[in-house]
Amino acid sequence: MLEFRHVHKTYATPQGPLRVLCGVDLQLRAGESLALMGESGSGKSTLLHLAAGLDLPDRGEVSLGGQSLAGLDEAGRARLRRGALGLVFQQFHLIASLNVADNLRLQARLAGREQPDWSAHLITRLGLAGRERHYPEQLSGGQQQRLAIGRALAPRPALLLADEPTGNLDEATADTVLELLLELVAESGSSLLMVTHSPKVAAPLDRRLMLRHGQLLAESAGSDHQDSRRPCA
View 1 (cartoon, rainbow, N blue to C red):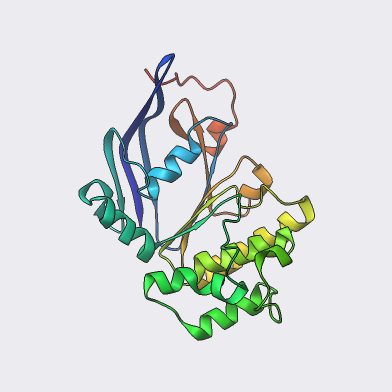
View 2: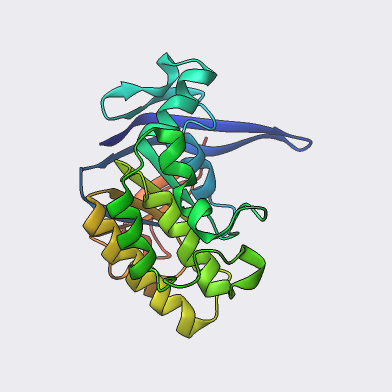
């Protein structure tokens, strides 16, 4: 479903080149969920942006469903995102001028895959039945994030990318939203790549990887602060 092959990424800074990813290899299978963990600034969001085709690697290859993202122009990558990806962020990014029902259907319409029965099911599962004509400002933070998750899953994307999706919520609400997210991902048949700093949030997913020194480590190695791997060189 998603594959990184020896991916390198460097950014220019006033202090010189900042090497963020160093030969990263990653495979995510269809229907699998993976938590990507690491300290702030470790490159987690960079990896997510590369997976979405929002950026391209300096070296190596990122492919989605067997399609190399570097082989597409910007318009082609945008079409692939609309058709194959769902995106959920810490910020809700709802359209303030659209009501709940229209926000939910937006991504499915852009992908050309609106399914009224699935949308109605999502509204119920999200706990938003009876609020279809409400606007985002009339919803709580938890309701807004549930709506953002529903919007991303409305077209049943092959892959859902989630960047700290519960980071703006209190602990109790975050637990509820995470449980719902994982249930709906399973129902939709999507794969899930989630960036999180929280071991608790990562625990229910199928696999967990730690990003450190520009490389991916298995969870057990990532928890060992004495690992011998060196920073990018």
